[in-house]
Length: 335
Image 1: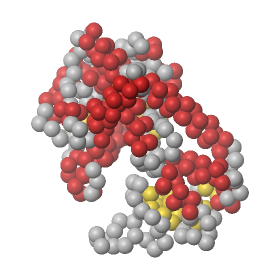
Image 2: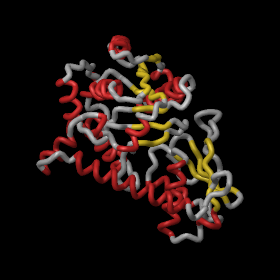
Image 3: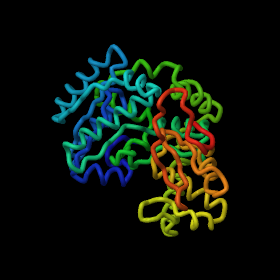
Image 4: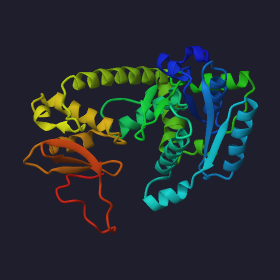
């Protein structure tokens, strides 16, 4: 497929041309440099290049300078800031990948405060979509799903991904044809990370086995799944299952057929931005709907699902006083 803004999906294109500030995440890698080039040519796109220096590799400082220099050549304003990702991971007891994601989202929220109405643009493409869908599937997610062209982060920022229909080959061809430079992230070649192992080992084997580009099949499956989830959410909304505070009203939920009841719980947790939402987590929440059972269960992301006064709600889990502290009484399961 020819890589031009004219081939962006309709929803992304409308937002990008709306005149609202577009905070484009530009790492300096091939995908984000293509995004920077494409959006800089797009009429009505009020573009700001945004670079997060994670400080994880020796070349990080040079990459930050590279992004700002190239943005200046295009006449695009650039903001960049360094994040102490290692320190964040250590202090919070989370992985480097999770800390980097949280740092990026926090910085985009900070930058958005200076640009009223701003939203975020990211350079995820079709091959990223396949990797994400495989990760979700293998980690126990319900259904095969990936990223949406337009979605919302937990911090409220709207995110667009206009390159989801394009492949890595499309992007490379675009850059080479226009002699646009990029920086190769050395960590992308390491099989130490699960996503890289999928990219370099598993997916090429799938392509060879089926003798075609299997990312097309995954892209189609994710698009259909997103359509089904959207339709289901709209149908559940029409049932008025939530109270004015947005909590699920259990007397109504418990009257639904079992399958639809589970769909209602899954949809509610998804809207609460529970990360890495698996079928196991949904089933544990289902177990607390019964008044004879426990009243709470732990969820990914330091959250709790709590049944209280015939309502289901999601709250922050209390911080333990020390490592030996036990989870709250009545907690079913854990992550």
